[in-house]
Length: 326
Image 1: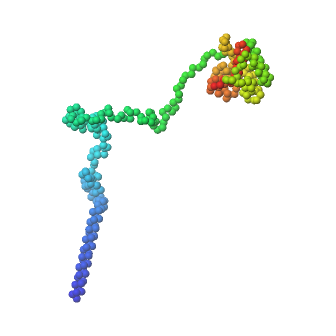
Image 2: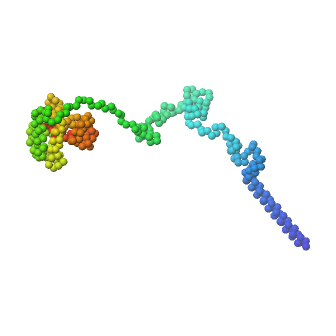
Image 3: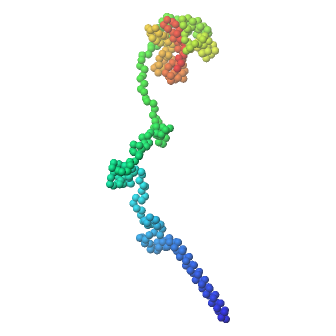
């Protein structure tokens, strides 16, 4: 009986010890959780209206420098960037040349390296300092002009300088038509050329070419046989286009150049001796009987006559039948 009771007492004692141990573990665990979760208590205090405005925030992190937590304001100027080299903390320029403001210079004498100082002067002087970008100019291989910002060409829309063109007001040669006013030798040569051209056979033109002491100039340089050259210059193989051009030119108006001088010349058509821009509307119509509008525009671009012209001297010599080249 005693043994049974003793065994029961031992069991109760062991159970009590176990319960005490479990309670101790639970309390320790609760203490750990309570210490690890202060925000919960803070929120509970806020909800109950027990927040002390002067108490430090539970979320504040201690500052290693000893300035408190996040709730404590930072010292004035703590967020200001450090001064650049050569600039004083108050934003002024360094007037001493050594990176220190005048207030930062050591008291009691001139700066190091100056007169009366025992320290050796600095090896580098302001004159020896490397020049800035504006002083030393552009680097090798770079353009002297800086790049244009945003890709805008400052010269866009700027054209060449406008030059005032003085209009040609020189007197124009007098225009004549037909045979009236032609010297007799000139009239005979014109009539002979027209007769040979109207016959339709370019070989008939050979005799007219040979009547002059010097054969007329047909092109720049040697042309060889004149009739062969005229055939090759014609749009057709027989040279009839050239004959038609001769007729059209000699039936147009003519002008007298260098009157009374050794180089006096009678020129057909008169367009060859006059600026196209100074022709009257009636004369432009006469011009279109010989040339197309496209031909006239090209001549305007070159500002000269670019078609056949005929020149006969005052003595009746046939001097040229050629095209002026630009």
